[in-house]
Image (cartoon, rainbow, N blue to C red; front, side, top):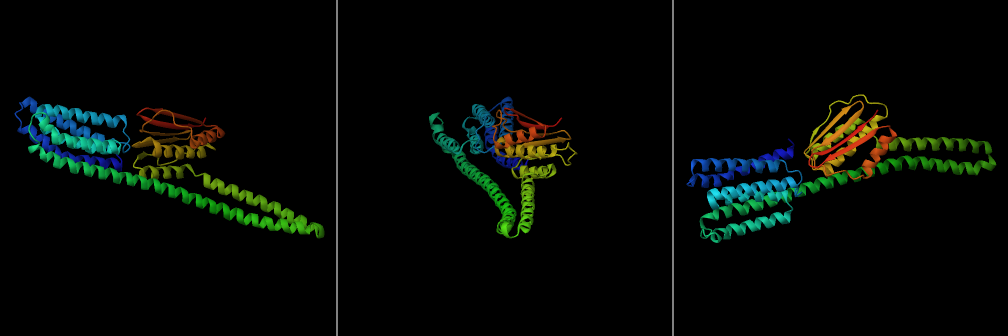
Length: 354
């Protein structure tokens, strides 16, 4: 269970205390023993559905099928409780509202909250139960629940925005570092080459032998500068498989995704480590950005690496620059890339070598 899921579990457990209101209505009703047992069972199932909905929520405001099924389940149970205890079941609507503020788009959640408040105000009179009188306590409970849920939603979205901003700042900082490295290498090397070229041009008529020496040094300097550029680019673009796994663990933890990663790195075939490292980097990046996953598992052996998640798995992944680059690197290393996505069950990316 991830840190975010822990928080969801605690949040749900705290709110469950307020099921005491419909429970009180149930035990004060004139239901038979069988009716009481059915009511208690419905409350227990309602509590389980509510907590499950919070813990399994993958993305705030995502409005996916699973979230809608949770809402439908809570509405159905509330309706059954209303058959048993009448308007005493209205207190259960607060749980539905608190959930939809996290599961639905904000505008729709606010609309449901307003509609529910209006229903509590006029519902009793519409069904001939008199004015809202003794049910005022539900309204006093419903309004702060809606407010706290909306505020929590806003705070979580703000936290997500700050995390995305931090990622962007990290990217900008990395680009600045690359620019400095390239400037330092090319700036010095090209300056010396320029001076040597000018000197050779002046000496080519007056001192041909020295001009030849300068040109020879110029050739050597150019080769050295080119080697330094290549070394720098390689250093910037390539990290070891162990480094990528450490980076992936950190990134997954920061995103609230539980990562099951290998602790040790086995010896892999020559030329395969780089493509394995790129596979880990690209797959983990896609998981964090697009999958809505709660869990990521990376398995590794000398001939293959596999990265799987329990996210949406919404069909084939778009062939963006990252995946295209991974396929090109794999082809160059004689490796094969297999990507399988199953609706509602996640995605698996595997890179293997013969």
